[in-house]
Length: 226
Image 1 (tube, rainbow, N blue to C red):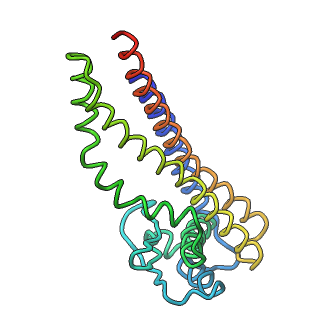
Image 2: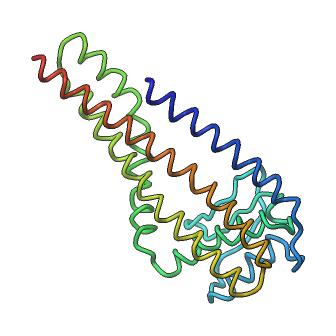
């Protein structure tokens, strides 16, 4: 519980810092005056990708690439924004589209895990809760072991996500720099924004790993007592 609280607090601090960074960088107008939509469409075209649509979606930091319908979904501020934050986010999401087009192995592995993870998430909380109750009341760890196995799958998913996110940022930054989408100063802002965004995934993955180790230690400790 303490571990979960610690990582929860760290996650909230990084999320707050990320929003603060994006707010600041959203006020830094690009000298190129390109919008997030225009940057995304240019990047896709430059990589020979013509079957992906760039669309605007509601919300803040709701930007994502959907491989199922091949859409780059940009939040309103990013889609219409003409600033360093919009350049960073729009090119990053297009980085995922490039990964998809090039059959990037980690993205393929991650996508293959999604159906299993959706099923696992439906049962995992109940199995973990019931499993811990049974472990303490009867000493039987079978139900908890099943829940922990599903939690391990979710933990693996969170770690597979890391190279996918870092690679998309690397592709984005390399492209906006090579094509003079941003000035050197704007490039550093975009790079910083994407680094903070990546840290949210890193903290989430480490938090899940810490919880997984807690469950495994709990099960091992109870077996030793028996």
